[in-house]
Image (cartoon, rainbow, N blue to C red; front, top):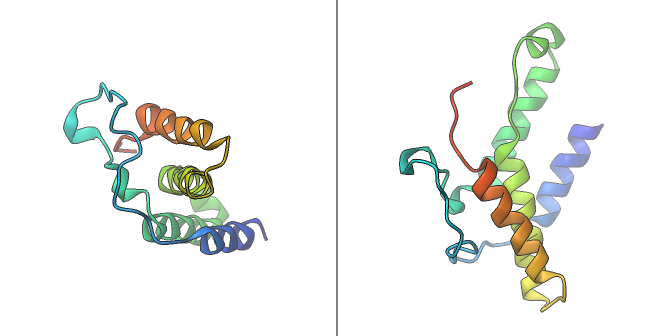
Amino acid sequence: MKNTALLAFIAFTSIFTFGEDLCDEYDRPQEAQMLIPESEFNYENALSEVTALKARLSDIPKFEQSWVPLTYSEGYLLKKVALNELAKNSIIAEYAVEDFCTFLVEDGIYYDP
């Protein structure tokens, strides 16, 4: 049920992503080849990640032995919130952008599980 709710939320919040980078002014200290570009936090990657999680949940012994990251899903949702708040000229837009950019700096890296 939680997977269905997450898929529905991702689908509901999917709007066309503007071509801009929200976090140009943030310094990302990791090596360049390890950084996930901001543009990769999109609906398709988030949906793919959630679909992989759903497949692994169907086989509990396999799931218990593997770790399923949700980096793209989390980044996509944070980015959508930031873009939606900016579009509304909301007073919390600055904080939503800061949340996404902090995530991008701290967790927006490729990894080898």
